[in-house]
Structures are given as C-alpha cells and as structure tokens.
Length: 325
Length: 304
Image (cartoon, rainbow over all chains, first blue to last red; front, side, top):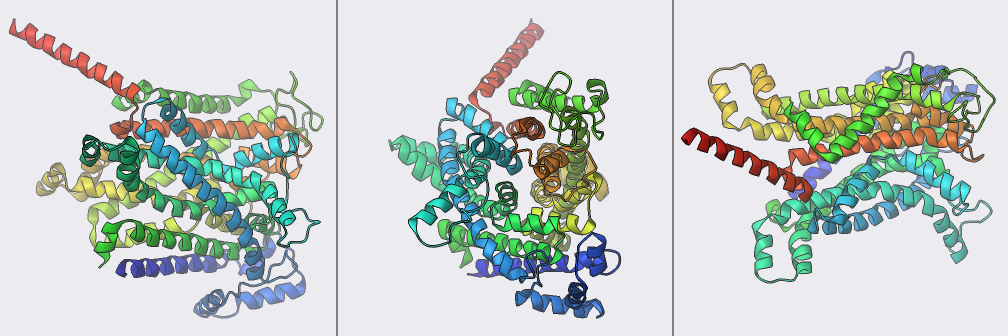
C-alpha cells in the first residue's frame, strides 16, 4: 500500500501546483487582476467589479490572499461566472462535466479496446499487409488534430449529408428524462463527437501496443511457448499480449487525462454542452473566474485518472504487488 | 551524414521529408506563387474557386489561397520555433537531472512529473487568456515553456543509461570537466531521441497553435492557419457550405501533420531496428551480405 500512498501524496502536490499557477497568474499581470480583466475587454457592471475586488481580496497582503484562495478552492467557492448569468462557477462546471465524461469516456474506452486488439494483430503478423498499412495510418491519424477531424466530420456527415445533428447534446425541445426517446436522441447527437475523439485516440493505443508486443515476441519464453506446441492464439494472447498490455494501461489513463483537452475542441465544433463549450464561451467573453475553474477541474480529472491507472497497474501486475509489501 | 543517408533510404522518412519540405518551400516563396495580399480585400465575399482565385475567397473577400500560403509561414515558424524551445529545455533539464543525480535529480524529476500531470491545453488557455490576444511568437514561447516535460523524462532516463558506460567513467577518471563530458561524451548518444522528440514537439506545436487560435485566443489580425479556421468558424462557413474556406487550412494542417508523423515513425524504426518491417530487413540483409562479400574479396585480393 506504500506505493499507492506515495502516489496520492504526489498527486496532491501536483494539484497544489495547479492552484498556485491559478493564483499567481492573474496577479502577475500589470495592475491588479481586476484591472487586467477590464483591460482585456471584459465587460462588468460596477457591482460585479466591487464583487471581484472582494473575491480577489486585492487590498490584503499576498500571503493572506493565497490562504483565502486555497480555502476557497477546497470548499469549491470558485467565484461566479459573469457569462452564465452569475451562476457559481462550480455549478456551471459540474453540469458540463458529465457530458464531457460521457463523450471522452466512451470514445477512449472504445479506442483502447480496438487499438489494443489491432495492435496485437499487427505485431503478430508484423511486416504483413495489415501491419504495413494499419501502423503508419494510425500514426498519421494520431498526428491529425481533433480540430481537423471535427471540422471534416461536421462538414461531411453533418452539413452535406445531414446524417448527424450539427449541434447540442440533445434536441432543445426535449426535456431530459429517462425515456428511450431521450436516450436515443442523446446517442444520436453523440455519434459525431465520439467518432472524432475515438479515431484520433485509436493510433495512440495501436502503435505502442504493437511496439511493445514486437519487443516481447523476441523473448525466449515466447519461443518456449511455441516449442511446447501451444496454439498460436494461446501464445499470442496469454504469453504475449498479457505482458504487452501493461504499458498500454498507463497509456489509457494518460489518454483519458489528455483527451479532456482534445474533447474541448470537438465540443466547440459540435456545439456540445460539455466543458469545452463552457470554456469556449468563457474565453470569448473573457470570463476569467470560469477559465480558472476549468484548469482546476481538468487537473483534478487528469489526476484522478492517473491515480486510477496506478491502482489498476498494481492490480494487473503481480510483480508490483509483491514489491509493495 | 549517416543519419541523412538512413533517412533517405527509408521510404516513410523520404515521403515525410518531401511533404514537409514541399510546404516549407511554398510558404517561403508565397509572393512568387500568388499575387494577392492575404490581409486585403481583393474580391467579393465567398467567391467559389475559379482560375482567378484558385481556392475562392472568405467572407471578408480575402483570397484563401494567398492566406493559406502566407499562413504557412507563421504556422510553420511557430511549430519549428516552439519545437526548438521544447527540445532545448528538455535536453538541458533531462541531462542535468540524469547526469548529476541526487537532490538535483529528485527536484527536477518531481518538476517533470508534475508538469506531466497538469493538463497542458487548459493550462495554455489560461496563460493565453491572461496575456491577452497573443501573437504567434508568444504562442510559440508558451507552448515551449509548458511542453518540455515528456522530452525531459525520456532524455533523463537515456542519460542515466549512458552515464554508466565505460567511456563516460573513463572521461571522469581522466578529470574532464562536467560540461565537456555532457556535451562531447553523452549528448551525441542522445541524438536519435532528441530527433524524435523534436519532430513530436513540432507536430504538437503546430496543432496546438491552430487549436488556440481557433478557440479565439490568438491575435485575429495575424494570418495563420489557426486564425483562418477562427474566421471560418466565426463567419459560419461550414453551415453555408463554403467548402473551399473550410478545407484549405484543414488539408494543409493534416498534410503537414502526416508528413511529420511519417518522419517520426521512420526515426523510431532507425533508432530501434526491431520495429523495422521485413521489407527493410531484407534490404539490410542484402547490404550486409554485399559488404561481407566485398570484405571477402578484399581479403582474397590481399592474400593473393
């Protein structure tokens, strides 16, 4: 358990760093943070300005401001959004969070399953037709940004052929209920964004899986397995893939963390009401409290998935379990 | 020179190199290819592609072809500039941590790990939002300053491996100063890693710049692929079906990305021969067989 505890301490430290960045960034700008926001063209009423000055506590000494801010962060008092009619930032982000989790979670898990499977096949038949076609292709897909896929998919499937809806997570006329009709509508709206996130992620799982597997296939125990007369599938899956998949699990967690950033863009393109659209509106309208809240929630998101991966790793790799004792 | 020979002998690398080189050339020689100024209104709004305006015009009546060509100058410069910053920082931090070890290593390593788990795109956005409408140069700077951690970690672990080799120990025993050991003994052994990390960073920087500008964080007056997309989105070119305005920057970005990715794949293969597919292996076997035969002939020649 020592391992897990150490990771927890580390993640807590990383979170504090994000908090520190969030705290000092607006204060490093010339003038006080409120002046900086005004200079950037943020529009506030006189009342909002007074409130902001109070929130930032610009009249107090710096260390006192910092501790007040730290306390606010841990009690989720992230201030109020100026764009979303003065709703608390925590509430705006909380609503959007589930949509983003739904999109990225589904897409990444699908990408992991398909990518890892195809990677195993590509490695087993390395140099074959499938490998020399799929591996470079997935690498190229991986290097293509979400931005490009999003726009291409929206333009072709959404606008030109009218196969998928071009905005929102569900029809605005529908009220969210647990009816089949509503769920069907949500799924229909999510096809486009999920496909875009999925396709970019795919390469990120296929190529490392293939490379790990190829390195492992040259090990003696694989030859041994074959020499014992085991079937090809058994050597491929139980001997090769079981070991090769370990680094991919870490990759899965990293991907889940990173994909939040990628999903931002896809959400903006599809006007999907997750964190990405919230951030886009926050940026366009210079809603600073909301932008800062975003960084925090995404850091937490990333750290949580990293931690999950650590736990999974211990669970999957017996060597690590023994080492921990 | 050996490195270049290896690159040109690998099909993927050659293809990648040609693609990237092509886009660099057309953006550098933009004034010779198009007569239009990318920042000026030259025709009516949303003109379809014609012989006069090869890729049509935007709603502002600007020539899309000219914008794409000139935009490449800035976008590629930002990509390569940020790539250089990333690699320079990654190498400096990674080697320092790996070579000196101890407290220095622990401090730098935890710094790397923390940078790795803080989501980069949101961090960049917060930075860019507070700095204001950021010029392409500032974008390159902030991408560079926030993205070095992954490279640094790879460089560090490789440095740890190289540091234990006999030639480094020999240099230490001879009393060579640390800077000389790092620059002359260790650095050349990291070249393939540094190369891969550079290409990866350039891809990342080009994509990130486009994304930031698309989201409206860039300076809207500069002409880049990202601001092209921003203006395209703002004037809802997608919804009115102005495919020429939508696809020009997209296709270029995707092509450059693909070219760099192919190059990176090839560098991987060169650095780790196990990953090479059988076609490459055959050629390698042929070459070694040839060399052996030559050596044999020479021996025979010397014997007779």
